[in-house]
Each structure stands twice: as C-alpha cells, then as structure tokens.
Length: 189
Image 1 (tube, rainbow, N blue to C red):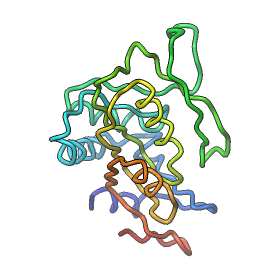
Image 2 (spheres, one colour; image 1 turned 90 degrees about the horizontal axis):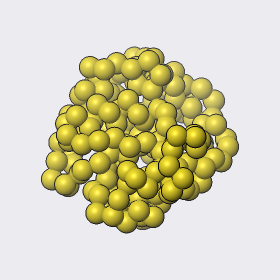
Image 3 (cartoon, helix red, strand yellow; image 1 turned 90 degrees about the vertical axis):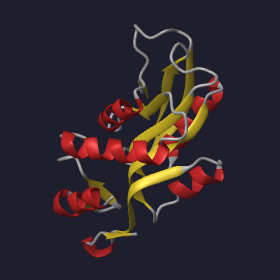
Image 4 (tube, rainbow, N blue to C red; image 1 turned 60 degrees about the vertical axis):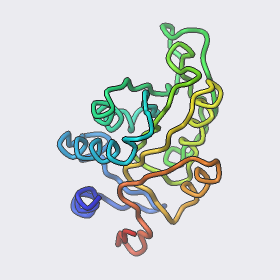
C-alpha cells in the first residue's frame, strides 16, 4: 500500500534493535484518514472470506481494527493483557511474548464473545516475530473459531513472523512489507 509506505518514510523513526516507531500516525496518535484507507484495503483483500468478527490484541491494534470493522460491518474483539473484575470468569487464555517489551504475558478473551463458527480476521499494527498473532490464533482455535486470515499494517519481512504464521496454514496480508532497515534506510518489498 503505497500510501502507508510513503507515510512510514515521512514520519517513521528508526531505533536500534530493528525498532520502527510509527506512533505519530498509526498506534499512539492515529491518523484516522490513513486508518480509513487501511480498513478499505483489508476489506478488499478479505471481502470474500465471510468475516463476522475482527480480533486484535490491546492496545496498538485496536484503532486499526475498529476502523476496519466498519467496512466488514462486524464487531471488534480485543485480547486483554489483564483480567479485570468485570470480565466473565470463563475465558480463553494464552501466553504471548512481546518483541517490543521483551516480556511474556497472558492474554485473555471472554468465552462470551468468541464462538465456534466465528470467521475471524486478526488485525495488528506490526508483524515481526509473530508471537502476538500466534497467541490470537491459539485463542481462536480454543474457541473453535476459524481464522480467515491476518491483516497486518507493517510487516518486518527480515524477521521470522510471517513464515511462522503461514506454517500454521493461516493467510497473511501485509500492507507495507519492509525487507530491511539497515543503516537507517527502510527498504520495502
């Protein structure tokens, strides 16, 4: 998606450890017009997949998922990193290792909202190691829901995440695929 690639080059910031910050427009402060175009593209890519639910993980994917859900006319469900007093006691639970934070945490989804027969599109801002997506796929499989695919805003193709997800037989569509970030220069596929 040329529009997203251009925005990454214009406003993205590179840091050591293959960290790309896009928080000025994608996952902290959000450019809603850009998210709208991202949502339209995910709808185009997955229009024929019978998606009836969108799943993401808190917090960075929520904005992208909500805008995308408007085009599918379906609800958004996000996996929570902490169990609060007001969530049902019956939950699906899995562990996820965060590449960015360098920690492992449990994520949960209430069984009230994820069901057998749901056709789920998983949405996230980044795909690097693939751990968040593997966790979300696990939650779907625990529920008996079908994963229609994963929609990713930015994929770091030089990291193993995409291959790990595809090995599970899950379709991955990434809108901006970065082949390298060597020497402070971003190269797209």
